[in-house]
Length: 327
Image (tube, rainbow, N blue to C red; front, side, top):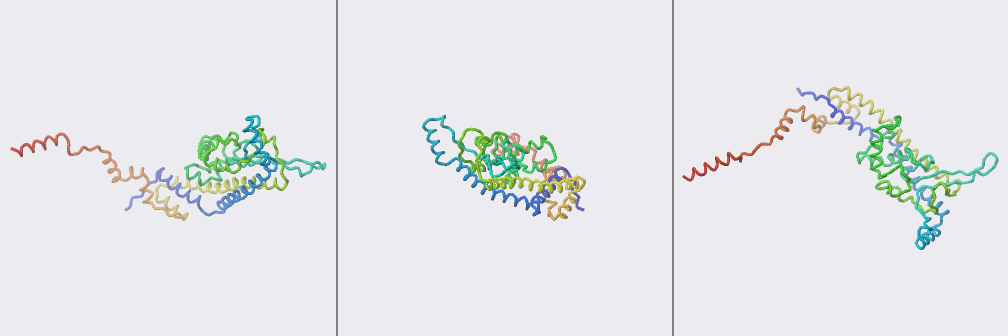
């Protein structure tokens, strides 16, 4: 009779990870919604960035920017008034209040990877949620957990969440994601590459809130649609990961109750996942070492520091036999 292999923590983890991997790659409505939302981000980003360039250069003509840079070379810091930025206050004055008075509508639009999704100019978790969702596959390939925000959506900050968020931020190349995001010195890797195309020349050394850039109502609406697309990606990511988390929670309960590996393999088969029990055992170092006598014996024998036959005593005996042969 073939001996049944008992479950242990390592085997449960291997089964869990293989089945979870399948969950994450299934063609579900939630996954498709996430992928489509990311494609929508790409298209709206392109249109919004082209529009932003037109609007910004309308307020800060390229000829004026070139002239001021010439003055800076000639007169130094007193004329240092041109800067690169990727976030802007856009405003329009085409609406009226109940009294018929013209009202100004304005908001902060940040084209950076960690740009806000709600009009705030300050760093916020929503921008980080967008970043990890957008670069999800890249972060997974770097052994990071880009789903940590979605998995911990109902939990307050904790060491586990902080650890994985920090790993993701480091992998993305934001050395200080809580600092002023216009500072390119805080950016490397994916963050720097992502942000680079969106920097535009602006005139004025003050913060962006004090230099609202005029646009039309239609242009403003396009900027809002782009920002909504970013927020929708975060929402679709959350919805998709919620379905995976629910499945994984049930999976953990089931695997914990199973006593034998064959039960876990049967579960995988019922889920449409083909797993080889022998392969799971072969790739499980603990199982090989503890439960397989042949492998354990081989491992112990390999630990022995055996001396070769060419020891000092053997050399003396060989010399003695050689001398006797000469007589």
